[in-house]
Image 1: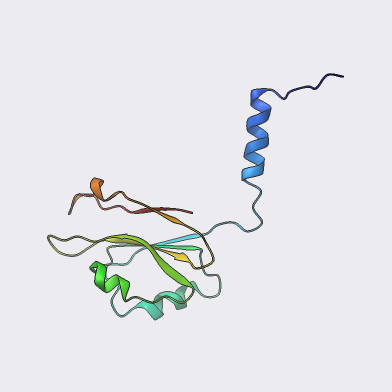
Image 2: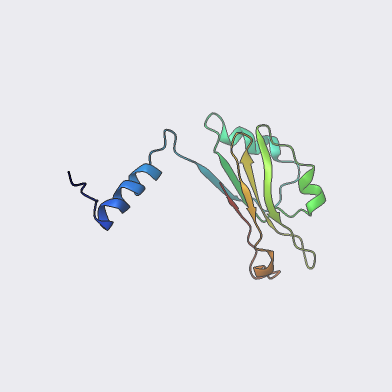
Length: 122
């Protein structure tokens, strides 16, 4: 009896269809917020009733300590970048508590005023 081995192209298709077999699509919400202080409740009301799995905010205008004090129901602070020089801007990602994630350290690529980035692996 011989066993037929699928070709390389077929193996890729099998892997791809397996990886894409997700019962619920992952949703991401991004907002260039231009200041996050005092608007957390407003943000959550904009997301109701379909809350995204991942929330990304750019130009939050906060430092790390201020971001740690932000509480978004059902979300945890995933990763962030905050300027230490110049006017505060920054980027941050909040992840639903039910998801596992890893922070990706990209701070060495950030250049205040020119390029600010953060990332997480879900």
